[in-house]
Image (cartoon, rainbow, N blue to C red; front, side, top):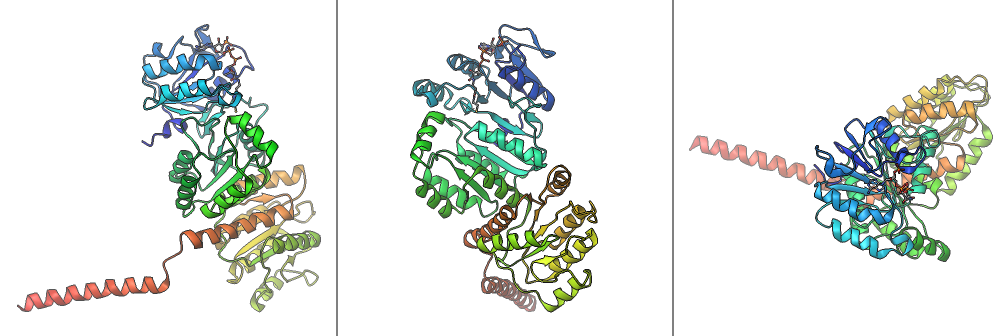
Length: 485
Ligand code: COA
């Protein structure tokens, strides 16, 4: 079993610092665990015998059964003796939620923990939010204040718990799914590199999003990412770019930030897609987790609102996309499903009285056109004749194997349909600019694949085939010759 599995799929969990007081961190964490984790939970608190209906133990060593993962949420000065108890109990994985270490200058306390843990127990944190995965919720943000995302294909690594939890909440609001989430804080043992390697092998992860304040080993980061991006895209947001931001990083996780250009160059070299804002981190990772890479930059736009079509075309071109003229056969196929006043060009304008059937015709025509590599579909669902089934029509267009990105702008009614479409694995954006950028990132990843994992050259492939056939033929001849002898 991979060592880090214990942090995401443990068999049993102890919460050290489980609190009797509702709304305290140790109480909310216990509530989150109770509502998600199916294995045994051992709350630890020397002052209590029962919390939230669960039997409480004064110390992990009073628990007879083995414990897979210890989650520690006691004040900083109590973490060391608690960790010693965990080691005595032979627990192999611990998450230290507690703050009050390197980030406030308590490097000594941090080093003590590091020394104590070395070779005995793997540590996540301190000063972190822990992990979140299917069947494991330890978040200290109450559910009535922060939504939890459904299961999905993005795995998210974050040095900051707050950035992580805010993004999880946003992701959940839109109905986008998460495979695994980890906030790693001061990273005195497990850092971003090990987590990247872990997610690279995780079957549920299709794209990795990373919020990074500092890299622990720049050269290894490049080397590791170069390997991972051959099969999984990585999107990274680097914080601490300004002098003031850099100072804040120091007092956040106790680490040094570096100049922006150095990080941007490292990301480029590593094939990592750089997000400049938290919004981009979310936008890009949901496109990359659900859509294939673009094989060329030639795309089509379908809309039921002319203005949105123009804005999207502008944004797409500015982001490096091309909108090719359509083949005659494609234009004909489009016209067969459109009234004469609709526009059978690229961008295709189905006009304000478009129906789901009109969308189906346009998506089919673009899906079948070999010159079109991807489609941005704009569905302004406020129009009276557009049925809700347009969402199913867009989903069905995935069968052409081309990246599809949607634009849906609006409020309550729109969001009801956005969540359905996101649930079908089509990324939806509220503005043309965000959708166009997301599409351009799919092209960027296409280029990364070409650079880092080029398909075997046709000549090489053919040469291999010829060599194989020749070997087979030679074997046959040798066999015949042997028979004759
Ligand atoms: N073993 C087990 N439980 C213990 C204990 C021990 N050795 N010592 C104390 N406890 C119990 C306490 O009795 C208390 O339970 P109670 O409320 O029922 O009395 C509980 O553990 C918590 O201890 P308490 O002293 O009340 O601490 P706290 O809840 O005020 O704060 C932290 C603890 C960890 C939340 C706090 O120190 C902290 O670090 N907060 C910031 C967390 C953070 O932001 N992390 C980074 C996120 S990105």
